[in-house]
Length: 260
Image (cartoon, rainbow, N blue to C red; front, side, top):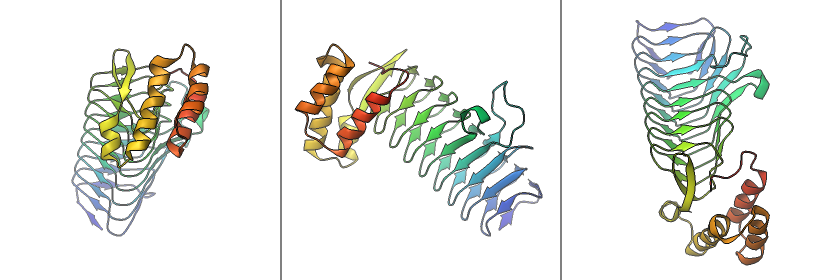
């Protein structure tokens, strides 16, 4: 364990044997950090009341603030949580808050995410695996980001929005409805306008699967008068696959409506 002498480590903090803590970091409250995780300078983790668990092999860059109180006037110092998985790169001045009791009390970040500088992830967000959130994007509370999502720079995402897997949100977009999986979205307010074919190719999807997904997205965006008609057509006309099942379940379960 390597801890710079200028850093302050509270009595309840638990660090794996090889955690590295750089200069002027502050770790306080109930904080647990797994093996191989590295903190650069001026990192703040934890709070007087919250609980923070950070997994293995994360790199947390200068000025990041993790596990601070939620920016919610209803929060009354409850011992809610921030849970971060493994192998995440969290860049400079990112802020991620603990959850609130009204939404289960947990903000959760998965594995192998790249969260770039000045990003904010609000209370009760759920972020999956292998996502990229580009500089200065601001994610409000209760947002769910599935897997392999790219969110461009300087985007704003409204509360309770869900962003589907393998989707791409172009920079400087404002998102107030659910983003369809496998799609490209842009604008203020953002709408899905195309299939993320290049992203799917790079991810190793077969040509047949990509064409099936593309056909389904075209039906949703352009081919049917109502969402139920689109669901019926996709079920009949598109080759079945786990990816298509996920897409249909996403569409059926959307609560904010689709960005289309």
